[in-house]
Picture 1: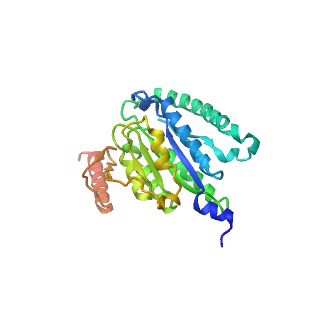
Picture 2: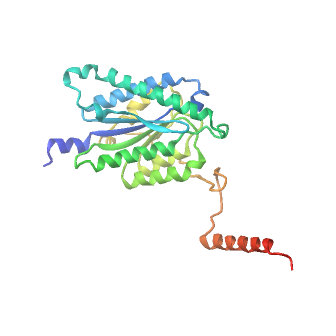
Picture 3: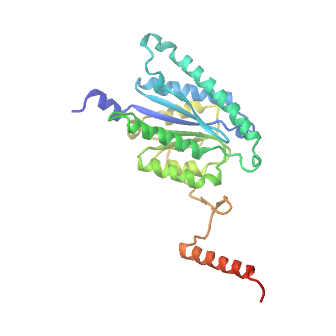
Length: 282
């Protein structure tokens, strides 16, 4: 029979890696302020940490031009039980301070970007890669580890130029058996997040109103992987499997796929024509 510690770590202990969309170009266009959104998120993180004293939470801020770690509960696991009652406000104060510094730096990068008027997408591919690197480091740290999962709180539209990087991260999470949950709070749904949750066995949900965001987060995304086998979670009605064009970086419904032989023939024909143009007239 498994020991108590191993049973806890294999059943109901969670490592939640939260990808928080802080894109200033998105939050400037919404009726809900980022402060209101963040209050729901902090209450949700408090609930996750309160469900099990061994639960861990990591928060990665996903901005327009950068992403960074802003919170790791494992770094404060040595807090004494006497100060545990005041633990949450102190830790979230550190989170808010780091988050404020990150948002300021990312806003400066966004203002200096020449292509800022194209698609105001956040750097989802970068934050997914950072989350998987953190989880891989946890896997290699020892035999006992919490069950990892990723939760994407996204509002920015998809960036078609990130299609390849995002799909590589999705397939990597699938091989690691790490589910990617997604909660999309934007006006139009996200094909990236739909595919991520569908392929990795996660849960995708797009709430209609953000006033009850805390309720959606706690009832859907606070459940650990073991408990999910006993509850009814939202099932995908339809998944947008559209891909992005490699040439123009746009989402398409239908496209052509060229094999390597055709590409080699096209390159050879182009080089021959180029040599003919450079040849001197006889």
